[in-house]
Image 1 (cartoon, rainbow, N blue to C red):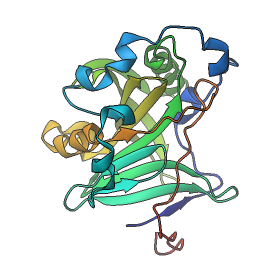
Image 2: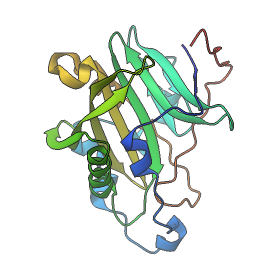
Image 3: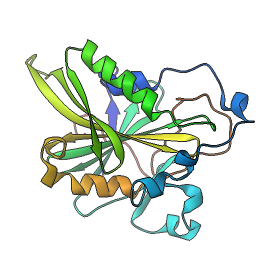
Length: 234
């Protein structure tokens, strides 16, 4: 496993900026609302997971192949590498990256209101941000519902500009949104996508009971006993 520290000037792209804009309303403000049925049935809508922690036998969370990262519990697949984006200044884990050969899956989780899911709204904002960056965004129906295919210009370390394609998947759960971004070969070649999709189905979201503002990031942490790798090693 490699734990990668996020550079101070690293660009996380349109998806991070769009989803983390706060609505200014805390979940406590919506406490009297009725939970959305679609949010509570996230697992059923995707033909499996990702799951809310209330849908999982607690004993299975202690399985050897599961890794507790705080708000997200993931299950590794053979040959898959775990990387964590860690903010250099705060030390907070900001995102999880699962890497398999030349494909990757980035995972982030956010708080959502009790009354409704937020993926429809967030998806429109992500598409708008991609367009402002000079790229394109198109909606398509995938195994987890409506998702986005983004093609955006990216600058490599040598200063050359190239187009990067990604799939952005959103799953509304009870009081949470799980956003998954498929990168690399799995984003453009369907035959490479199943391992990334299976890794997403295996995710368990641990929302917690504390009030949080909608779109606030759910807290992630390093696995027990883990130490971050150095910059050169990462």
